[in-house]
Image (cartoon, rainbow, N blue to C red):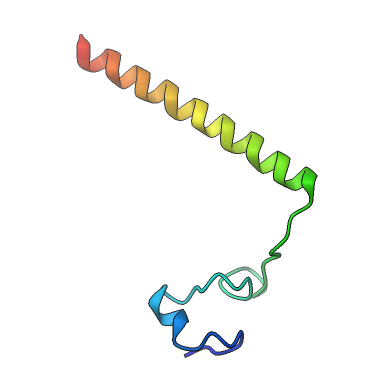
Length: 66
């Protein structure tokens, strides 16, 4: 059991990740707070992925209707 962050057994309930920001990343640490610019960039990327997903769904619908 990894008790670095003080969450103890909680880690095991989530496959070793508790959301504390200390585990499971390249150097064992993940920043927990993002700048406004970083948040904006992540949202833009997310919006683009959603658009791609919508296009794929629309293609699948057309495929199924023909």
